[in-house]
Picture (cartoon, rainbow, N blue to C red):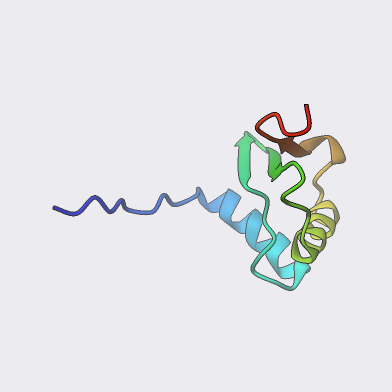
Length: 87
């Protein structure tokens, strides 16, 4: 018995938007972890583990491309998380 799930496909407008960002970034990688939208508003969220993770060069390029495609800074969120390290 297979537990494989069929991939979820994005609505065409959202997929086109991501494709435009990817094209401007010049790379396939770098998209933030979470992509959410309501109507024409988009939000991107990146999760980074405290002291273990950092923004990669491809993510910097992707971030710059997203801004050039019209994403506002308040629609980009980087969340640093941890298990209480250093407390």
